Length: 297
Image 1 (tube, rainbow, N blue to C red):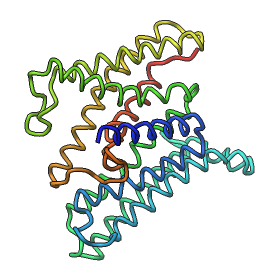
Image 2: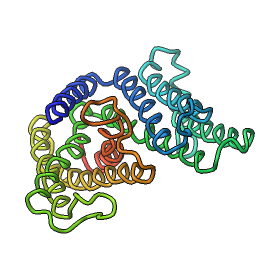
Image 3: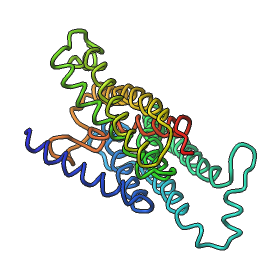
Image 4: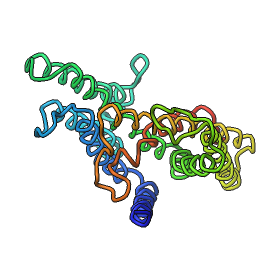
């Protein structure tokens, strides 16, 4: 079991490195595939799809919404090849948003409204809990994961995107060892009895230290102020805490629905959500902290 988990983890790490370095359309397509698979895992686990039934109409609406959303990310990569007027119109600011952002929000709104229409026009085929689960699943598996792409497309994003995985995976490893050695006070005894506050502190400190060490490379290579290391510390610490919350949310969903794993596509790990549950929460937090705290000039 250990070696199966180890080799699966190594393959996931390699694939993550490849897509993270390439970025652009390849990363958008890769995240779209992950999001679609994660969405299906979530709808099955949370009983949006009744047990033993084929894919439902509201799941199809969700998948179409995800595909359209990531298509817009791809369009961002190629819009410069279209007539200049299209680009000018897309990035014309109206109120709080430019037209491109409005279109992306519109895609999610259409997905939401379509799901609700399926609820009323097919009544009583779907229960309100299924509708709520389908809508939450869209935000949980598609929108939150897309912040990996947004972070990668920032200035120096090929370097900064790895903070998402440092705060997710390093904190998880450090929390495991700290909890094994010093864990006495249970963090969430009714949800995850093995997690302790000592482990949480170890995970937060480990992630913060790893982020600062990584930040030293950033400071040296890009010649930015050493004060940026404070930002890396904050990102590492807060990102680690949010990562743990993401892991616990996934555990709560599984316990509420009496499932052990979200899937079995990754040997030794389970499903996509079992491996990327913390990344889903960490990616938006890291993105916003980078934008707010790290100054490139």
